[in-house]
Image 1 (cartoon, rainbow, N blue to C red):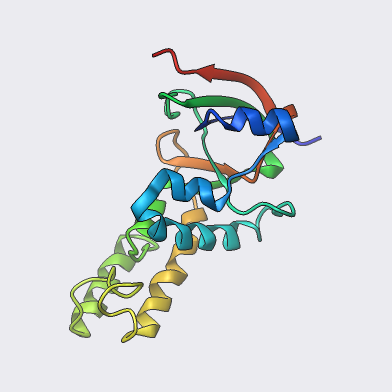
Image 2: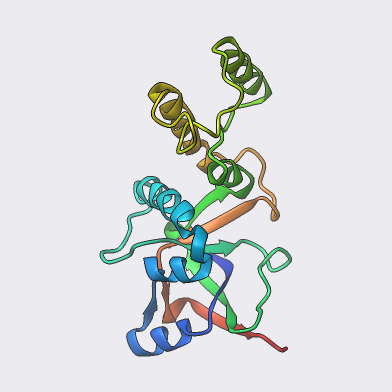
Length: 192
């Protein structure tokens, strides 16, 4: 029997209607576009990258577009705000994709994720040797079409987001593919 873990996730209050009607809630592209508005174009390709890699670790159910971000601790969960709820979930651990949220920030900023301090120093020296000032311009910045090998090097490093060196409730996050009714142990409502 697989181990169960408790996760917390803040979602739009309309997700309650979806769960009631369909028995499941899944994140759709339009939800991301609504949440991030003018900068959704930045997040969607990165989320798609995440989906591609994460689905090789935990099989993605048919019809799922994007993952659901979760906290691994009540202390570090996103609290409910207006028009949201927080689901307290009990999830089979085999359905959970753990990752380092601090490293995810590197992905969001199109940066190289180093293996360690030495790797970071070597990487910086290599960029300097090549006359390059930074790494974030390789993905979609001014150098995006000029340095395909550097772009690949940066993007290949992102897989390290799934490498967890230190387990702590503030840096480690979890993703699941969907919220099913049977996972919901409690719902925390915004108190205003």
